[in-house]
Image (tube, rainbow, N blue to C red; front, side):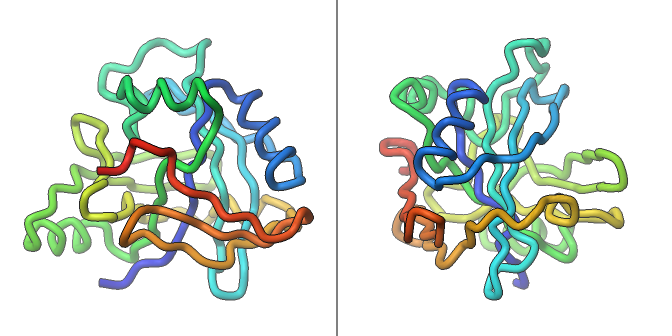
Amino acid sequence: MSMEVDHLVIAASTLEEGRKWCEQVLGVSPQPGGQHAWMGTHNLLLNISAPNYPRCYLEILAVDPSAAAPERARWFDLDQPAVQAKLKEGPGLLHWVARVPNLDAALAYWQGEGVDAGQPVEGARGDMRWRLALRDDGRRLRKEGLPTPIEWSGTGHPTDKLPESGVQLLTLEARDGLSATLSTPKGEVTLQAIEGTLD
């Protein structure tokens, strides 16, 4: 099945903690993102596109204290007590999202492999339109090491409006635990998934 790395998800207890983490660990400041009212979260963004990973970005995600509690579980296990406890120790790599040309086909393929990746959920901001697969329980596909699939259907993508940051994704490993290596102004930095959140 065809898929490309779309973005990495860094989770933080607060967006300000995520901003400070980005500046301290990667040596650059992230750009303003937006709010996801239906998920009760908000984000900051950083372009990490590279020759081997085009149109790729880093998303710093946190629960939005100004938003109403969502009617469903938040994505990427953000509501799980174990994840919340780890985030109190500091931000960290939580998950990855992969771009697919046809979300319905991807979900059908995984269903055939016995993997329940959830149902398509639509989102939009400006000229950007996307469909993302989410499970009702908000859980990631941890044991399988699989990403959350996303299909961009609008004319825009977050990297279209993000300036080059001086940070590039060099490698991503997801089979035996999620890790990513980036080239940054501070040299190469390897991020490991938040301990205790991957089965």
